[in-house]
Image 1 (cartoon, rainbow, N blue to C red):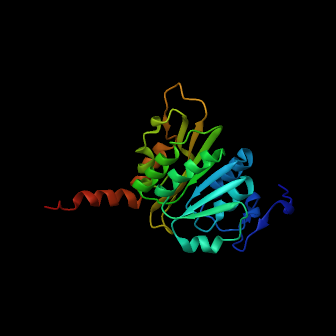
Image 2: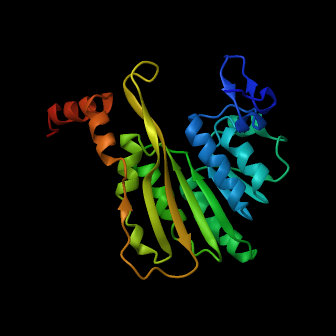
Image 3: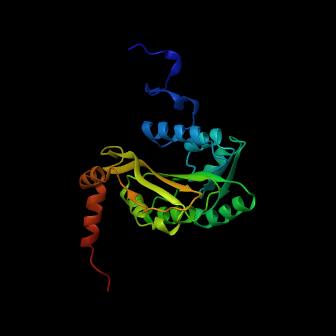
Length: 244
């Protein structure tokens, strides 16, 4: 097969990169996650977007390109300082997303703007993930809101995602925890499961049908977990003596 060399760049690592070459900042997503993320934003072109957890700015650079306005929430001030001045349409908010999100949604509504995209990739604990989802799905979108959940293949994150009662807002129409499957990394991440994109869609009209929380790769998740660090970690928890 002949490949036009103009369409890709070879990184220092020797790995060819295609459309993500337009986004030079490092980001912790697999190639299929990046392609999905870029294409979603290219199609949606959101008026307002929110990112929870900026890390090195990798996913933020994509959101900045395709959204009119981005609010980036990060609890680590040092990460924000490293990214200051790189994006002219991004407003950084330093602090706990559990506190910031309710206030921010109120601000967006009062300004007559439409939140149309959000990425949850901050606190990876069960409670943290659950709180971020619950806060965001309280929103009633003027148009539609697509929420992406990173690391849906991680057992702790997934527990948070599955413990949410998505039916509380009748504007939630679709939930899929395995929109993009995650990965099992036996070496670099010490037998841990990471990655994966979950997807939630809210629409302006109310839901009239039953809402399923889809887990299309649940069997893969369960099999992988049995060979992972997470499986044995849960087993050892059961062996701990009860406190008197």
